[in-house]
Image (cartoon, rainbow, N blue to C red):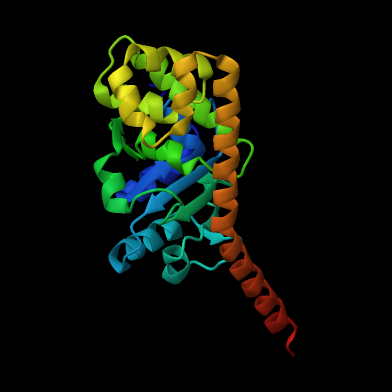
Length: 257
């Protein structure tokens, strides 16, 4: 398991923890922890969007000298609808770090369930990091962005490389549900036919592993990715339209004498 690269991200996370903000690290920095990325300068978190937690978050943002840098504004109503709120930190120890905050993600469970499946790590200096569980991180990465799909593959491959000699039913089911490497899918499906049949109920790609054809599995994976991209685009379309409406209204108000 990779340690978080020592950089200004540490100030952001330690400040959130110090103010007892109930949050989970996700995005590129979470991928660093799971050994699927080498560096990310952004910090993405999912939070509980209740009044108490938002109050604690406000205090942490004040300490970080964080400024909201885009629309929408930092308001619970936008978080509840699935928007991300974006900040830029200006504290000397976290200078220019971008902090993106969400409370809902497409295809993911509510925060209480995410919290139950979280990964908790302690750094050498005793710092505690609460990280989105790897299965939930993979689900959150199923977007229309090109960069996310290679990351999903690296996340699952790294997990497989770490635990293939120590399989459990949960680990095997994770590989069967989420692997994007044909060779791994074919191998795992052949080794664990009962678990394959169980996973097949929710992932039709596994049907192609029965023939052992890497080409057929690759083609099925491409179709699966395209379907997820379309679903993500549909999910974000009304949210983007709402942002455009907010932007137009702001410009209109700015032009008023």
